[in-house]
Image (spheres, rainbow, N blue to C red):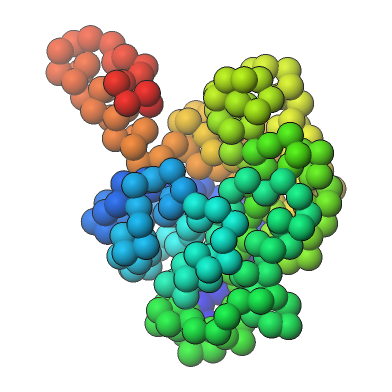
Length: 263
């Protein structure tokens, strides 16, 4: 089976830079996969992506050096299993707030006797090899998103979930629930304390800590802080930023920090 390079990187405590795609395009997924990312996540929660789009994007990423991942819309075993069958080498699951939710998520990613994943690897056999069923339980990456007060309160129980590789902070939702404002780079004391809590408890449990960031500079700061997996903005944010910078350079002006899309 094709080994999951992300898991080896985590074992060696190497940083992992993860691309994030919200635009439904196999072509843009292929471009992103050739830019040097360690992994690329297809976002089916807040992106404009359906399963057909996701399939073509996973196929495109599979032709690049990046490891294909997917964020599901919710903790739905059927969607999780279908994306794994389509060749996702890891799943990021949003809004995990309890140990029971974490166990349900991990169970959907693992074949019996370790879980409840239904057998039918389909395209995963093409990408992973004929022995995929024998090794998939050990290679598929599972990351639970911490985005709520309940998730923070139950953090140790979530991290104690057998088979969970780590947690991934959704900073906008976490900031919204803690401070009333969605701000990925919030400096609110409650938000800063929550991030430190996730980092410290993840380390204590020997689990990966990841986080979504708004830029490369922000991602570099998170790596220095101790996160192992960082996402330096998504394709929509990067496209908007690059366009504003190009227009500003053309006109000899400073680029505005935000566009009409809010990014």
